[in-house]
Length: 194
Image (cartoon, rainbow, N blue to C red; front, side):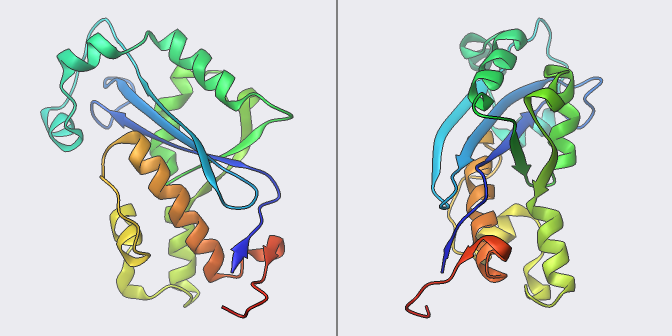
């Protein structure tokens, strides 16, 4: 079954130096655009430079980020914010999507105080969507809702804890979740019945 979206969605993921946006820095932002026909395009991976890095060692172990290399390749926050605004520019505000997206938004808001002007205020969260589909009996209970488990369930290969890889995997999972429910009102059924 092919899918048709009413509008593109930008799937976004972040990697950080910890869990507290008041103390830990936003390190990387990855984004892809899920087009109206379900195609993934326009990958972007941005590294954020900070004057100081207050990080949890466990966070860097999970992401594999080397702070010295990161700092050499990164851009100041203002440049990253400008790049995200340019990425989102187009005819009207685009909807965002992510996995467990409340976490990402807590780190994005300080970077983009005008977030609601750049993107629509509503967003898609594949973790919440999967939880709903599990409760509805559409997705098996044994799957779980972590991105790695959903990706494995749908046969999507990716490297976890890399912002661009996670954003891409999230967009692919969203497409599969749409297929499970017939893509809602925007569905285009496969005429072959497959």
